[in-house]
Image (cartoon, rainbow, N blue to C red; front, side, top):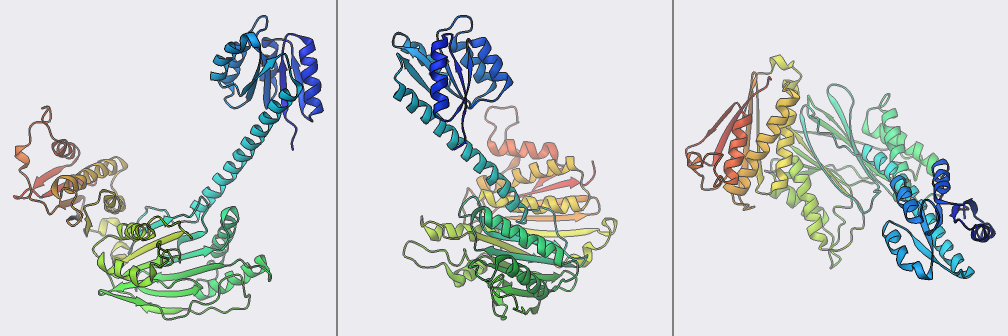
Length: 518
C-alpha cells in the first residue's frame, strides 16, 4: 500500500508529537503545523492526502482553515480534533466536508482506526479515479472504432444502432472509402471484454487501414488480418475475432462479401431476403493458414443491406428462446417503409422488447445500408446538379424524426447550404415533423408522417404530411395572444425562418421553401 501524506495541525506541540509518531509508525508520511495559517501555507505548497486539524487554535480557527482548504480542494480528506465539550462545534465543520472527528482525550486505537479508515477511503477513491481515467481513454478509443459520422456518402444511406453490455463493448464496425467508386464496410466482434477488447479492436482497425493500401479484396484483407492476429494472440489463446467485410462499388452496385465466423448480411430486394451462400469461415486469430473466400452479388437501386453482430439474433427472452434470424428478416420486411436509421433503431427496440428484462449477454451492433443509385449523378459538380428528390416516411414516434432531419441536412449541406441556414433548416423541419406527429396524428403510432424533399437549382422544397384530419391554419390566434396553442407557436417559428410556407386545403400537409444561399 502506498504511504499517505498527512498534515497534522495543532497549537500544542505534545499533540503534534504524539500524532506524528503514531502516523509514522503506521507507515505514512507526516508534516506538522503549529497553527491554521502555517497549515494553510503548507497545504498550498505541497500535496496532502489527509489533513488532521484541531478546531480550537489561536489565530485562524480550525473551522476557517477547513473552509479555506475546501475552496481550493474538494477532495482532500479532513479529520477534525475536538474535545468532549466542543463536539457540537464539529458539526458545522462536518457539514463543510470533514471526513470524521477525533475526540479528546485521545484513545490510540480509536485514532488508528480513523486514520486507517481515511487511508482506505483515499486509496479506493484513487483506484476508482485511475480506473475512470482508463475507462474514459478506452471509451474514446472504442468510439473511434464505431462509425458515427453524419456525413452523407454518395450512393448510400447509412443507419446504425449499438446496445452495449457494459461500458467497454467488444463490437466494432466502420466504413472506409477506398477510392471515388468503392467503399469498404466491416463489422466484427472480439471475444475479450473491457480494456482488452478495446485494444484488440484497435489492432483490427489499424491492420485493416494499413492493409487496404495494397490489398482491397475482402478475402485478401481477412487472410492478412488473420495471420497478424494469430501471431499476436498465439497458438494457445482461446480468444478470437469474428469479422464481416463487404466492398460496394457505388457506380455498378456490385457487392463482394467475405466472412470470418460472422453472421451473413441480409439483403432486402424486391420484398425478399437474399443471403450470401459462402460459409462463415474460421474465426480470426485461431488458425494462421486459413485462406478466406468471397462472394459477389449484384445490387439494385433501392436494395437494403442489414449487418449485425450475433448479439442480436442470440438475444434470449425469459423463456430462454432466441430472437433468431427469421424474426430479424420479418422485422426488416414489416418495416420496409422506414429510413435506414429508423430501421436500425427499430431492430434495437425489438431486441430490448424481446429480452423483457433478461440481462443482455453480448453487445448488439446493427448497420443498415440503403443503395440509393445516385452515385453517378452526384459525381457531377454541384453546379451541374439541378434536381434531387428524396421521399421518406416514419411512424408517429418522435425519436424517429432524427433520422429524417439528419438526412435532409446532409442533402442541404451537400448542395452548399451555409451553416447558418442549416441551423434554421434543422429547427424548421424538426418543428414541422413534431407538429405532424403530436397534433396531426395525435401520437398514433399506426399513422405515418411522410416527408418529401426536392432540390432545384438554389432552392430546397420540403413537404411534411400527416394522416390526421387536418386543421385550418388561418384559425390560429395571433402569436401575442395567451390562447396561442403549441401548434401555433411551432407554425409561427417555421414562418420566421423559412422563405416560403403554405398548407394544402385539408391542412394536413405543410410545404416549406428554403433558399440554399444566405
